[in-house]
Figure 1 (cartoon, rainbow, N blue to C red):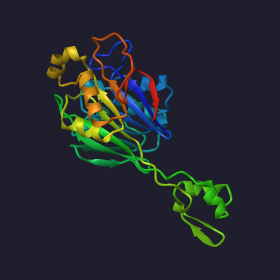
Figure 2 (figure 1 turned 120 degrees about the vertical axis):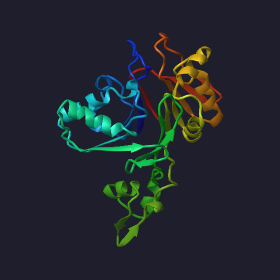
Figure 3 (figure 1 turned 30 degrees about the horizontal axis):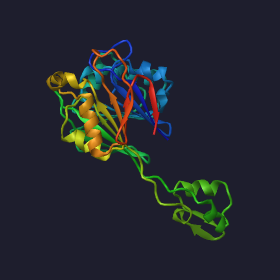
Figure 4 (figure 1 turned 90 degrees about the vertical axis):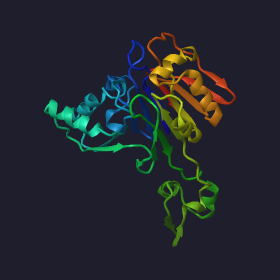
Length: 297
């Protein structure tokens, strides 16, 4: 199961009801974190996610509202006794930032931290579940979007086909459902004999802190679900251009153009105190995110 949890939906200045940017994607219980703004670890506790399930963290750029919660979270993981590796991905200089902070506080992490820096275009394999493609965006500092691509899953298990092959219910069913061959009654039974066509995985695009650009189009073109910068309303487009951000309407038009199924708008300016109403347009579900929102895909 894939679930998106928006931990922080505010922008540069946090408000009482919107924290700094962070989004968790839980995939069969394992968590990938996109950005880690200040107090992200508190948000994780509030929504009852488990710190121990975080496997990867991706940082889109080095502005504080996307980064200042990182060191606190890394330290808490160590204090909680974590001993399994954590992968951290981000722009050039992120490794130096982490190393400096650990030197400054004279601290050590008790678990392996693997840091990989990127320039755009890389694809990082997260194991059997998914990979993440790095996409350059357009902001006031080097900024990157992410395309989380769930790998294709085995097709639906055909119980009747299994019965015709005299396979008893139980562990053999489970292995075949996972795509593994099994041996029964002196013959090898391949998964394709009892499974339907492979099921396409879900793709999730993440594009925060960017004005419209080639990268946002690439993400929208390839994503079924798009998490997008919506810092300003359309009437404040001039502010968006100065800050190199996007408006609500620009994100919606992008999603409509490329046939996105669900659009999650986030990173709202603190000038807007209201919460916006979800809507649908031409088959597009438009979701205005709030802190602690959970969406099962």
